[in-house]
Image 1 (spheres, protein in one colour):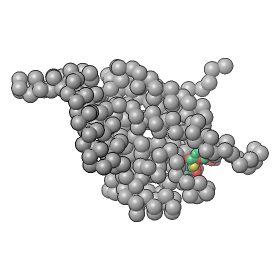
Image 2: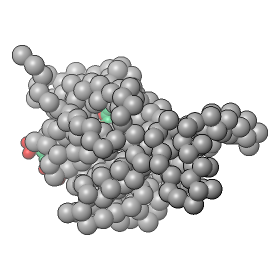
Image 3: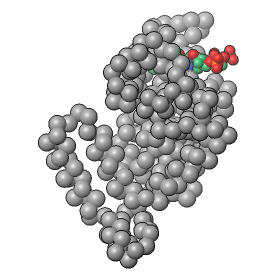
Image 4: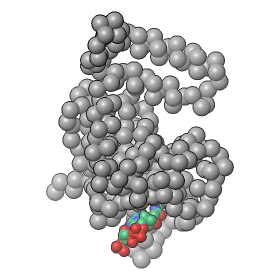
Length: 264
Ligand code: LHQ
């Protein structure tokens, strides 16, 4: 019997749409969902036709984090080896998104809780419906933020706010999240999918290699010294300078026309 489609996947006009598809459980994360998500992300990496990615979800919530049903006391609770679960099903997804040299736009509706919030925040752009919310739910059940949460949060909003968000575990509205710089922007709930697609289409028409190398440089910037970052910029700029899109950008500039980037 084939496993249910927990992840939707479609490539259209240079954009891969990757959808969490477990709405009846608020898209909470199981081993199967995570492994299908990883499969979709590796297709995004391998397929040259993919020049930008949208991560979205079905139903009323973006993602409620780990499926706590897997730890339900009524079903014979035994303290799980969470470290093993994290290494097997969570960390590979985070690494796949952060090292994908293509921009990832995340569309958030409803609540993004626990690892669901972290999953959104490791994407390059987060657009949220203005009635959406983010909850660092971990402290409510005695855990710590995972899925890159302790890496991203202080970088996005500073240590003081990251501490309050993670320790207090209070719900943060999307509007506040945008105001403190946690996410890129908010929009009307009915416009969410269209806004995310519009942004992804715009990114897909840009110089893909240059954007990928930009992401690589930004990934390093907050843990490098200035000298290390200057060296990295030199190396990556050398690579960007070898691309056909750079040649096209220069040519178009002198011909006073819009460039047509092909992503190579
Ligand atoms: C759920 C869940 C859920 C299962 C709602 N699981 N059913 C990593 C690795 C390994 C281990 C542990 O953890 C981690 C990282 C983590 O992600 S830890 C954090 C896990 N997530 C949470 O603690 C969030 C728990 N959920 C909630 O706090 C609320 O449900 C939220 C704020 C997400 C939504 O609240 P409401 O909109 O009021 O919905 P609800 O609470 O009524 O939930 C609707 C249904 O979904 C309900 O089921 P039911 O059968 O009663 O309709 C919930 O039990 C179920 N559900 N989250 N994570």
